[in-house]
Length: 253
Figure 1: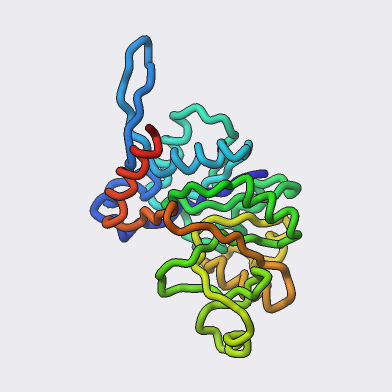
Figure 2 (figure 1 turned 90 degrees about the vertical axis):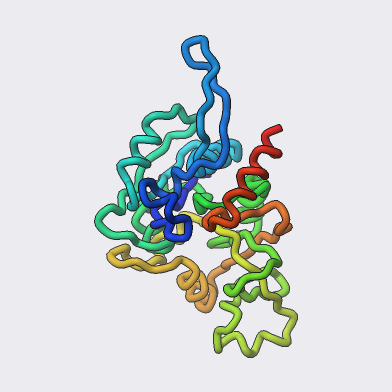
């Protein structure tokens, strides 16, 4: 399994923290490391947590996309020792959104392995190995991690967990009374390498969810992996940043 971390966003919801750094380098906790025989305190960023999570799941090759303060992200990645090989997908000339960003990064992947896609501002206790195993055994083109939580952007799935569309899509009216259910996308997914050839050329920005809805309508298997919402957190907002720091400290004990 390979990995793709979406780290190119502008981080506008976290301003003023992101006025001088990318969202990926917002600090979430501290750790003690031994340097030249002395213990030193180091800040842990969202990007480091995401990379370590993917490494723990057995990912040996990770691609990180960059745009906002790209040089800082590149320098940060080069300053650390990682278990996985970490490559850069450069979007400095044009921010491509989630779908365009994934398609743009496609040449950097092997084309043989499933790819775990992870937003840099998501913290969770999901068993990422289990997500990939479910994806593989189900034979899905893409598997979206989802949960039942309050949000204005829900997706509709059938009784077998297959994507039907967005909550308010006109084409979904026929499904509303047929054992379908609404769930929120969690910013983590696994995609098969066959997906890349089905995405539009990355010469313009576009969101990945629109592509999943379209592919589902064409008969492709866009499935789901449902998880509890209580150990999941979107850290892209100031009000959740302090919660994330407290959560990460408790998780590290």
